[in-house]
Length: 92
Ligand SMILES: [Zn+2]
Image 1 (cartoon, rainbow, N blue to C red):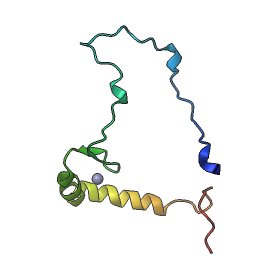
Image 2: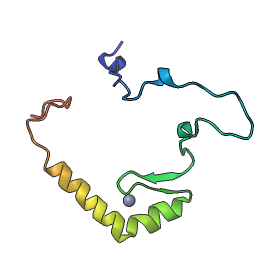
Image 3: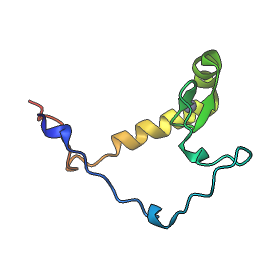
Image 4: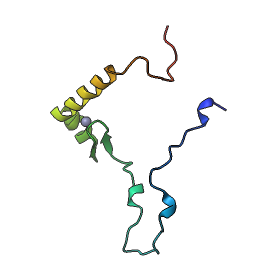
C-alpha cells in the first residue's frame, strides 16, 4: 500500500549461517541477546535502564548526567547539515 511498506534490511556483519545451535539443555540458557527489556524505562541518551518509572523520570531526568546528555543531544541536532537527505516534507 504505502511507499514505506518496504524496509531496507541492512545485512548483518556476522553471518548467522555459521552458527550451530547446541542441543537443548535446561541448565544452559541460550539466545539471551534476544531478551530485550520491555517492562522498564531506558534512557537512550544516557544508556541507562530503570525498572522503576519514578527513578527513571524523576530522579534520572533531574540528574546532572542526564542533563549533560540532553545538552549533547541537542547540540548534535543543531549541527546537522541542512543539505542532508531527509524524508521530511518540504517546509514553506
Ligand atoms: Zn538520561
